[in-house]
Length: 163
Image (cartoon, rainbow, N blue to C red; front, side):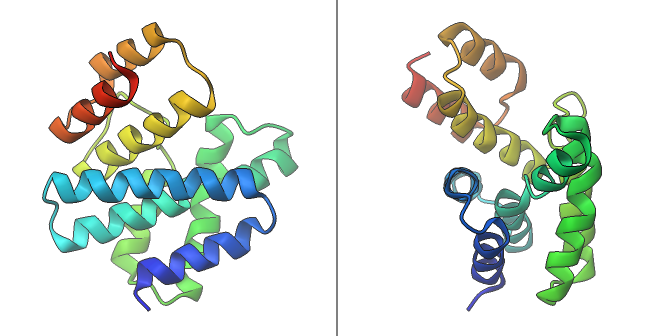
């Protein structure tokens, strides 16, 4: 099994019977994988992107336990240590772990996006969140204009939400 498959199985086990969270990260993974392939990412960046998509919200559970909140700032604190622990247990290369943890620690920061893996994760997560949170057409359009940069992401946003 590929490392991405191992991470997927580990994340499903991590989230246990929380089907809502499992469905969320699987949808983000699907969009991220498709967008990364459309943007022709190199194999290493594609692998990092797919692992990011699966683990990006790994800090929510601890955020809710420690702070009674799943706010982004708490996820940014709690996510990297959880991701590092899980990925080390799976034998993921330290360079991949470092990048995944760095992005997880800021994945709700849309002002300083560095790298296509980070950019595509943000776009994939938004494609899912726009539906799950029932965002208005205006909010979707504004986010798309201000944050989406990839050709593939813009096309998908346009086709899905008719903006």
